[in-house]
Length: 259
Image (cartoon, rainbow, N blue to C red; front, side, top):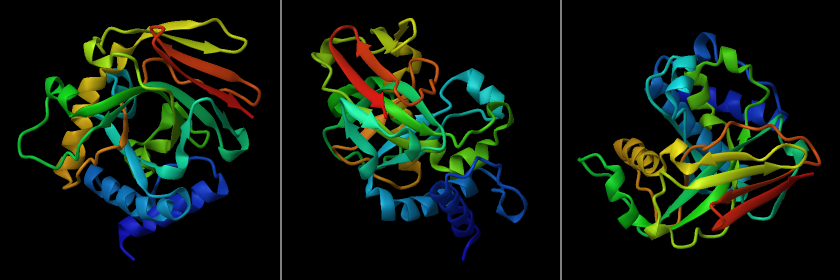
């Protein structure tokens, strides 16, 4: 068994046991980002046995503040699995997670296969590649981590904590909208609505970054994959009984309840 496979086996066992997060250490500590992504690739194979085939991609650590906190100078990436994708309105079981976190995103869905290419993709090229855009919640499984003591290589190996996504309807008229300037609202039962804007996550830049990362690893992003592009608002940790709505400028909304 390779080191990457041993790391993946440990992380898969931790997910199955709902074990708390711990930094990989000793002979399981990734030496660098490439080794961490090799472990993520091996973990992808193990997760697919229970979570379905890979069905999308995610980007994390898009803000400079988060990058500085974990000592990393670029975003991190991960995989979504078919069984973890839900249509809005969705009911999400709190007991399916060690600790459920929610992020507020746009899901960009390509209309065509996008194979690797030598030249990096740019944000302005992205709209021509897309078939639809949908508001989405990302479901985070951070395994009760202490955010002040994160190790970015462990985070990468652990598939950037992706626990799935809830997808709303297609964003009406998205081709005519400025995706970096759309007002949005997060409404959570029992709290004051939070007004944000989609540009906080730079969705077109994030999609291009996803293409460039996976393309550099020789992977094609396939037509119909769900690419979630970073949160427009702070992560929330709703408990059982909470309900949330993420609405994009009155055009489309995604809803879930925690049961």
